[in-house]
Length: 414
Image 1 (cartoon, rainbow, N blue to C red):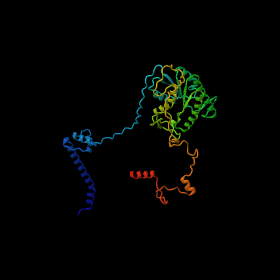
Image 2 (cartoon, rainbow, N blue to C red):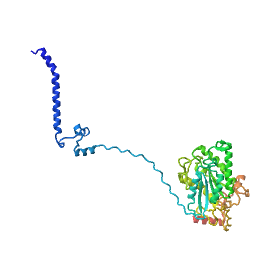
Image 3 (cartoon, rainbow, N blue to C red):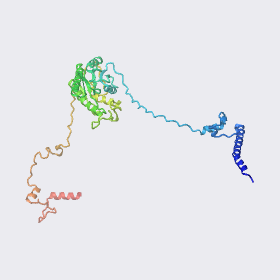
Image 4 (cartoon, rainbow, N blue to C red):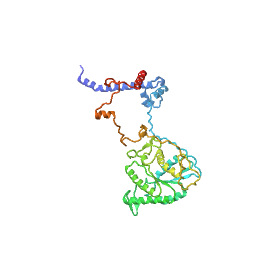
């Protein structure tokens, strides 16, 4: 029998034995790993874990080449970021070639603000093939009648005309004038009573200055704009411009209908000079596109050709008149050659149906003893022709010889 004391001694020594066995197992594993590392690299197997997380002793050892190639094939490629889409600018519109102008070509002077610059571009395209007309623009984009401290048009236009010696002047001003105006020592609000009176005075002075040079001129009105308040102001300005131009010998050119729809509202796109729907205005709703500038010139072209004495857009001004000389009124045309012509025939002419008067002009002549009248009024039927089915006379009447022969001929033909 084992005593109780011996049993307690054995129980105390069991943890020590377990610990000793564990130490022996760890030592055996280390010895096995050391022997495996001593082998050649070609005899060892490699894994992706060994490559990514090598042991301390393997960190500077390169894997075999075939494994490197395999790893490169299986390695995921980084995703390429798509480049941001770049908005390409619209293609440049083709430019109209301008013919070389003659040395004595007549000058058309275009003055005004930035809208006048666009109008001048359109006139350049309109008269590009005409060697007898040269467009000269003298515009100040920020100018107007309100800020005369920036540019005083009534005072400067005479010197411009004297320097360029134009045959005609084209004016387009007013798009920058929706702002306060200093009248005396007070800043007046746009389109107030005092503001309007001073504005009319300045436009009158401008028209009078051009009229004093004895050069014919056209005053082109403002178009509609996207902002409704600006559009209503331009309508009021156009009335002032028309009055100033016509009171000083100028001609007002109304372009309003070319840039609004049938309801009078602003449009960005619309028909061009050829009737094709194109973009007429830029994105800001103020400036003109190339087609819009050409349309402005289209409205100005006809009265300008009249001043220059041009009969058609393709004709050339004669070089007999010096450049800058005022255009005289054209001489009256010769009397046309007399040509014998047949008067047109009216389909409603009463003579076509044999009558000479309209129905109801005169009562027709009354005929006596008409058979129908005797039947209706007197109740007497007309006498039946001899031999007819309604001839009930007895004894039967004999037909005349001529009537009988006629009936026989008719029967034979049938």
